[in-house]
Amino acid sequence: MTTSLPAEVESNRQPDHEINPQFLTRWSPRSFTDQEVTEDVLLSLFEAARWAPSGSNLQPWRFIIARTPEQRAKFHNFIMPGNREWCEKAPVLTLVISHTKTPKGGDNPSHAFDAGTAWGYLALEANNQGLITHAMGGFDRNQAREALQIPEEYDIHAVIAIGYRGPVNALDEKFQEREIPSGRRELSELLFGGEFGQTL
Image (cartoon, rainbow, N blue to C red; front, side):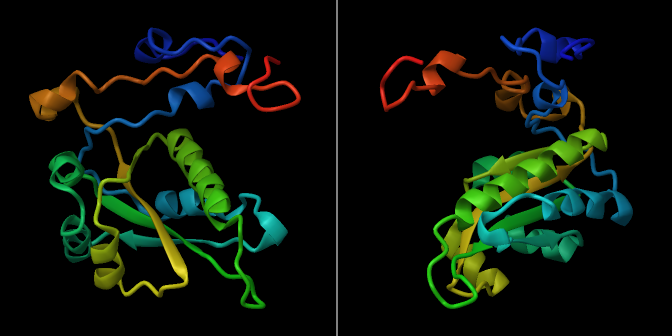
């Protein structure tokens, strides 16, 4: 049921059909506190991701996790300045990658699709645990590959900031007005009936 939503969510997100509220209350704030995420809580997010479905059950996703100041500093070096401004406070960063090959050495056509599903599971479980997550595409993938020694048969997808939510006024002013749950396209824009471009 989509009832008893936080005010900031209710004013920006109204579904046309009844869904579990977790799909509405999960969004991507930028303001983090530096509160530590304990290992048991952190690993529960990756446990959720572990159970995501995948083509032929190949489970191609992998996560490189940065928790120590030294590990996070290595990540900061390849994150674009606009993202680094707000993500430096996050106590955990993780890079989502996926194995592009099958066990027999062929190409796995669903590796990116599957990794995205695993990230979605992680994000929902983070929300269930009272954490926030924010995925970033703004980083140098070549630098990330070199710095983290990622083999060529792995694709690099996103950096995820993980932690506890901080106050809006802790952000630089240019980010503050964007610190609200985003809306979505109308469902009718996303669905086709029978073939591409046809109304359902």
